[in-house]
Image 1 (cartoon, rainbow, N blue to C red):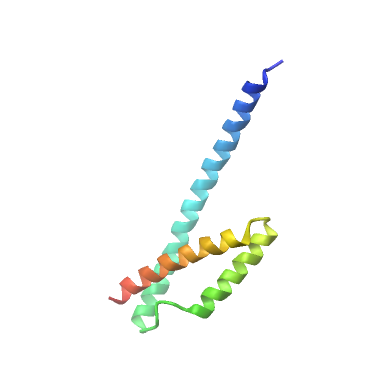
Image 2 (spheres, rainbow, N blue to C red):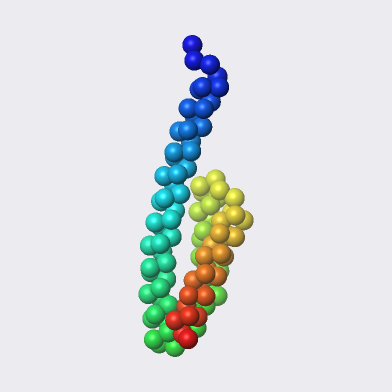
Length: 98
């Protein structure tokens, strides 16, 4: 019989490997997202549109919060996460306009 500490160590290793894979998915997904927001920023700068779109941002936050509830994730965490991303995107858009 394998001792409980060895079993726990193996389970911990498996969870950490999954977390590492998911971290990679998050990083590459965010990179892809920012490629698209860069293009949006360039379009906005070219056509003298404001770097921020409060109505779209509010809609996206609501949408993400609904998805978070469906995924059993804290919707407030999802809101904070998206607000952080939106603030980064707006900063990039402002740089395009300079």
